[in-house]
Length: 158
Image (cartoon, rainbow, N blue to C red; front, side, top):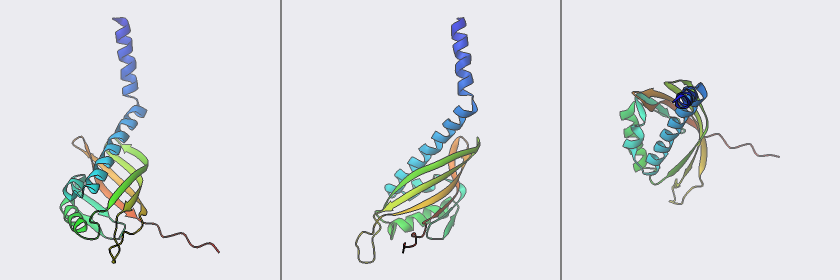
């Protein structure tokens, strides 16, 4: 009985440690990123929008911002019906920091493939970066704000 009590206390000290909590919260955000990527690749604008906080914002690499879950859903629907129809995205979280148990920040990279040029030919994939702030609401992580960019090409070397 005493061994069980000692084992229980040891386990509880590990599970309640800041490092364990940090890793657990980080894994929850990584799972949310996978859900977002899967919804994008399925062309599911509603599924993507559901990952945003009700008042969340997204500033896209193209330079415009959608405010709120409804505007984000409508904008994604429009994008998937237009130039982003059939595109695929890969998201690579580069660094996730948990600022509080309810706020996390992800620095990530993405690659977009399948975009077609005016002639209908598939363009080469392009890469970009995003900074995403997550907010935990009622036990679930939501995107409170995302800002993405596509860095300009490196200058040609002489």
